Length: 496
Image (tube, rainbow, N blue to C red):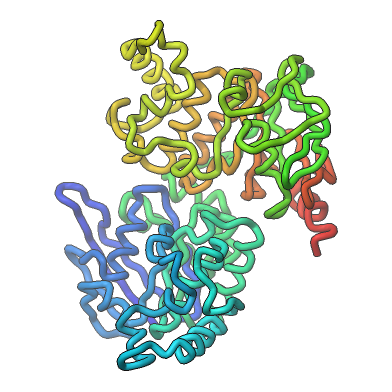
């Protein structure tokens, strides 16, 4: 497979999205396609997949000009795409085998009645192709997110796949699931499949790809072999300026302890003890299932827990509910902002003020004027790019949605801020802005607990790091020991 795009242009109304894009993709190669949100990655993907038609330019497959007018045209040339929202294409109450084949394809297994044995046998062949060891009769709603994603890859394998586009494939995966996905990507690459890998996670880009293509404002800003590039060069090409320090960690830790607990125990974590000081960022790391996220949810009152001792600013605290936690000065950034954090059809202002309404209420009435002024101050402070505070938060980019969620807690002036995957699914520019917000909150004396599967982020932004394994804290890393290598050594010590 050799796919070439030459001088591709695409506009929507007066907005030019792609301008003179050239791209070549070869079989047996992983190309990383990176860029900030709005750079043109999604539009280019849809041009390749036949969902959009370019206004100008030429597409060739193996040297022959082609017209990819529909997704079916692209599929006929072996081009397959797995979007970040791949679960929209899955029927959770049907079996794995039934999800692998369309109704038309199922007709191949019987003229009047589907021969389930034949369909299951063919399903096993496709699953074996990608190394997925599951029973074809298993209902899909019993699969993990990673297995569902691999199921989508198995679907594409049944259509003579020659080029696979993966859009943010690890966005909803933990470390172990991501590792399994990487193994399958390498297997596909070695078999001659061309892969376009779209990701904001630069460590994945440098690990998997042979070539990097950076889009900025609809044009190719950089194309080079991955081995010839540094992370700083890629980031600079993405944002159009030099980034001196991608993780601008500032130390603001003080001596006074804000959050203190001993013997904190829940369903999947046991006897956790920790102290977080004012202005300190305490990281918690470990492999999937170690309990780190559950600790944060327990401290915010989302899951039940008990503790020998738990206090905030010297006052005993029982996290019986999120309302109790908020009253005590605790804020929480969940790992999935759309499902757990934001009311997508409500305005930016409504989402920001959600935890602060008592401050704008007199009797049964909310002063919308005071609320509007206060939320606009937060919008300006955090540089949330929105037409106005009345815009639906769901219309914003991922980075601006995340900043709106941060804005909710900035408005409450929290004592403690719990953050779980705070930069998941946002582009590099938005990550830098979120790191700035974290530093600003630490400078104000907020005690911060950070959980992240992005290990470079976790190590770089933490003052101290607790490592959890099988529900227990097994190590505390500080100073020279605060490294990815030490974190993994402790996290995997008895898991291997």
